[in-house]
Image (cartoon, rainbow, N blue to C red; front, side):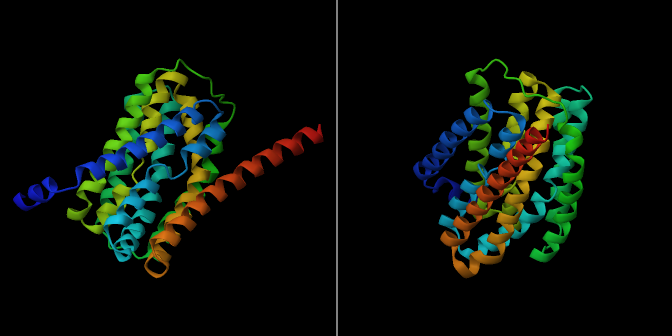
Length: 276
């Protein structure tokens, strides 16, 4: 413990602060965008790697590619249980339960799954075989949470934004500061924890209602498929291609996937209008 505390004291605090501030600025921009659009488009923004991307970028600066590859495998497995969190929260929220109860129900499920994931030394194939069926089932169930639920703008308070930014940036700082002392697999799990989702629930549930928040998060399941694929790409390629190319392609996968989902939705809407 003494060695860990001594090492923490030697961390480049200024560098860590710059990293956290850069993430905070990006979160502010994403938050302002997501609150001004409907649940589907808000979900497309929320499901981008706003938290995971910076964490992996900063880890790449401090660790060799092999570390990132092992961490990414654990992230794939952990990301596979995120839809369970979203659907359980949605069940409680649509039933009219309070934000704390709905949030705790979803988080408890994610934490239990994350703990169980930590006990297994995953291969990439195993992580994919674990996560793909969960996403497939969740995608089939998600429309039940999104039907006829409009996203109405609530009163905007800067305190809401501060809560969200602090939550994300503090966790980013903790993961980066502690990563040298944590098992690689645990770092991978923490790198994919649903921080953005949790912050959205904390802020939006009381402002626009549980059903509308559940609708936004259910829409995000489709977007998370892109992130799931991107993290798997990092796990498979970062040790061979290097962090710069691997992480850049992973980001491109996330953005391209969400743009494809947006185009598909717009195309369906246009087809319906022409069919009338």
